[in-house]
Length: 267
Ligand SMILES: [Zn+2]
Image 1 (cartoon, protein in one colour):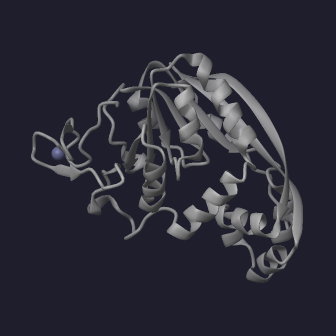
Image 2: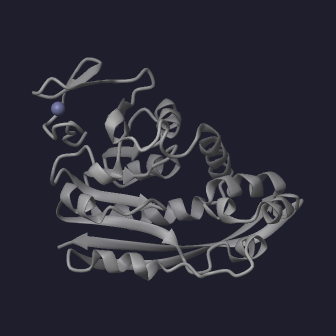
């Protein structure tokens, strides 16, 4: 595993049996499921930050049905040729993408702020290091990983750069301009295109663009699939409740997901 640091004093953590501790005496127990919670109570914005258990289950069931498998395959195809040794997946959720990324690096770590997601991931995939932690203050040492992935999670570019080795890569996946356009048309009076280029601007000066591709995936959803998707996206929370209810009442729905994949190299 990469060099993991104490979230309180930023010194290296050493593992002894079921406990990780630093020279200052801060210690963190390995949970029954095998993950470590490195989110101190004073770094939490709420009692249970991140996705709720209900949202995590909806996401897992949607992904498990294979709707986004082309994205998982595309991410792996971009990363495998890099020959990386250690990979960090930030905002990994219940580990659907992370578990496939063991095909791109021998040493894979998944990090998410949501404990229910990490619990689910750790129960399922044992050969990955699972951490509950903050993307804004990564519990990893400087220059400790070769590849960082961020799929649909908030970008903390300075932290990503800090934990990457020289010449390391970041894979960012964000919605393409017309991602789930027909879903959004049902939810909002006016639909705004997503702006993946906005994210790219944040990397200027410290990263160079290596590869960029757009991936489009047709989705033929049952009512259950549509409801799971609604639980996963921020759109549903912003929509008027009556519009959301009308959409979720549909027996089936056809739409298209569109993703922007950007692979960048640290300079
Ligand atoms: Zn410490």
